[in-house]
Image (cartoon, rainbow, N blue to C red):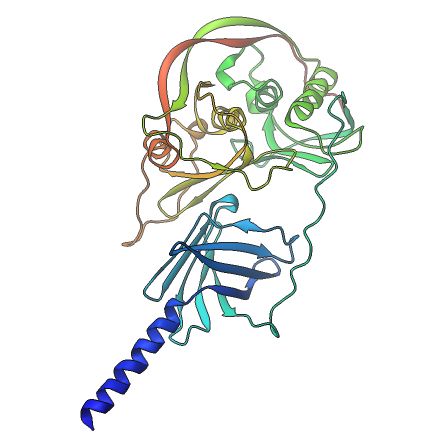
Amino acid sequence: MKKLLACLIALAALTGTLRAQDIAGTWQGTLTANRDLRIILKISKDDGKLKAVMYSIDQGAQPINATSATLDGSSFKCSVDAIGGTYEGKLSSDGASIVGNWTQGPEPRPLTLVRATKETAWEIPPPPPPPKLMAANADPSFDVATIKPNNSGATSMQGLIMNGRNFATRNSSLGDLIAFAYNVQMKQIAGGPEWMDSDRFDIAAVPDQEGVPSSRQLRTMMQKLLAERFKLKFHHEQRELPAYVLTVGKTGEKLTKTQFPDSALPGLGMRPGPGGVTLNVRSAAIPEFTSFLQMIVLDRPVVDQTGLTGKYDFQCKFTPDDSQFNGHPPKLPPETDTTESSPNLFDAMQQQLGLKLSAEKTAVDVLVIDHVEKHSDN
């Protein structure tokens, strides 16, 4: 009898373990952020490996493929690099729920997922149609542009975004705007008054043509704004300057083709968190990524020699130094006993992206300022 009882207990434990390991299916839960967001995670198995697709059904419900999904015992982990998010949780012994945290920024947020049935599953609405793009041959200008001083005391640009037809930049210097408009690094801008880097502005603007502009069209509108409102005039010179050259590493690139091919503009941002700063890149070509690096992160021009085409989604987590972010790297959360420090940017790019940044002198285009004025009143 004792042997029979022991066998039954062992069988029950084994059954629970097998049920826990069978994580494939549809899971759903509500994430509490600025507002409640319903999340659906569809998990499947392919050749013994887990795959996952995420839907935020209150934010358009566009399917987003997870970069990785693993189950180690009862510990489930899922990374969604396209939006810079990770989920970690514990699968219950009956295989009916996962209790964990979603992290997409400095602070994790609780998210409990429950296994959905046909009766309880939330409906996934069809994704919204892709945004209407501005005509490729359009030569737009800003129809309305408001420029206001920013006296917050912040020392670096806080944002530059295009949301639908609304363009906005916050705490930008004139040097920042010139660098963006002409796709150069600050050290490629010569001359100009001191206030060009010290005075800071907030700009809100709307294009004079319908549709979402491309990166080229957005830069064109900014060039016209600088000429009209700041009376900017300059000439080009070729000068040999210290630069960074980006190439593919010996082991080959480790990039993922974008899940958002219809995006007119790239998603380029960063977030500080435990152990380092994470660069989040979505639907970006490599030249757009190098533009972001030289404008926001690095202190010299970045020359793309990868030969890579297409658009990619990826993340890169690194520990910044004082030469980056214009000498004001983002403040990281205090380290704890469990904090894992990230490598420096150069090692992180090789390890995580398969790309190599090399410092060398090379000939680059320099914009020499001939004339500029403080912006005209709105």
